[in-house]
Image (cartoon, rainbow, N blue to C red; front, side):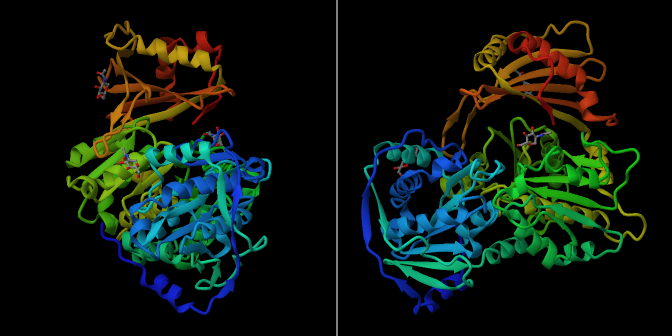
Length: 604
Ligand SMILES: *[C@@H]1O[C@H](CO)[C@@H](O)[C@H](O)[C@H]1NC(C)=O
Ligand SMILES: *[C@@H]1O[C@H](CO)[C@@H](O)[C@H](O)[C@H]1NC(C)=O
Ligand SMILES: *[C@@H]1O[C@H](CO)[C@@H](O)[C@H](O)[C@H]1NC(C)=O
């Protein structure tokens, strides 16, 4: 992999030889294992108070280090660094101080910390990638979960390619947490690092140099390589164009202020200051939590156009708490993440990063097949993976890892508001917004009349490729046993063929999704039940996917994803069009009988 070392930052570290030095001694502190520290795919998320309880944070961080410091970068580079950054939620800065002392206690030679301690997840990924001697990043985030002393805090680890740690890594960390006997921490008072110091400032703690860095520089540089900022700026300054963005008081906010605001001149930025409690909301950009934006964009709460309200905005977008997810809206229209992905794929050549076209695209299985249709028609390889960004990351790195074909330039996304590409190894909320501004700029190139709006772009896409009507029903807090029984019942249908009766929606067959990663060979089973249907009158296909999430003591959420393709008639709202399919899926799965639920908790 070719990663250019960032000369500037390295230069700053060398220049700061006269840094303040805090004399301190390492104190190996006895501890004992704390149960329940099993990281999920996005790290360990727990209640903030649990993290603040004695030894909790040190135990987990020491366990991460015990695994991370065996990595090739750490053992081959005597001056390796580790990044520490967070999404700014409650406990962010105190945790950073403690983590610095533990890293110093473990003789990590260099620590990098962004000014104010806050960075979005995509900017973390790009920073790690830009430093040839960076072992990884300790990232303080619980993504879109609420923040506060009574809410959630989390830590995840990103490895040297900027990707979230894989299961092998997190399993090893979990094993360490079960046997830990001591952690190493330096003395040095409560606060060892001034997080408000200017970028470039260093302090030496024990034998460790801690350098405050500019959070924006590397990431802005990375996005400037992906997009033509001249084109974007010109479009933003067009008097017919008006753009708004909702940062949901997350870590992406300051990045949006910098990039959309300062650099591109977008004026209407909302909730872009990072706050420890995200202003008291779930920083999750969806129709209910970004409802101000939905209203501003001239939509009813369900995302369909409002009859009596128009919008002055051409584009409205939102990012989540750590800046990796995105929501895209136009005047009176919400673009589903699956459609957004397909449209970016179709129009990719207007984005300089993709100017020669795409080599690969990928989507998570529950996302709609809209991108598959674009890929097929354009001869681009398309992958369908389980949910989780690591599967995309593996495909992006296929060449390096296995001497295989390269799928770069690569585009990927998930129905859960994640979109991204191989410029980094995380999903990227702002990248998606810039992709949409690029698309609008391109669609309006040379046009002096009425603007081509988001709705026009979306409808032209449907006209060209057909439309995948798409909706998700969530049945929250169902009894775990009933949920398992439902899935088992569906497994019983595997191999059975059709017999959908005389109705319009004909059940064809059923399968369970499983995936063997072509790059690392890992196998993921039980990824969801897919029911295939055919619409009798048109012959178009439809499907329903059932997945469970969060099975445990507080019950399970049953997710039902509905998707119906129509090659000709793309009028109407998705919830309307999918009602019949939803009924059929509920009937076949015996969801009502098993769970007692008449209606979903939420329809997205
Ligand atoms: C898991 O990590 C260990 C230690 O880094 C390594 O030796 C091993 O090959 C890895 N296993 C897999 C399946 O990647
Ligand atoms: C269901 O439909 C998909 C997409 O058309 C297809 O790939 C899959 O093989 C079908 N499943 C079965 C069991 O035929
Ligand atoms: C929006 O996000 C919140 C918080 O994650 C979730 O509880 C809610 O169900 C979501 N609403 C919709 C309409 O998706």
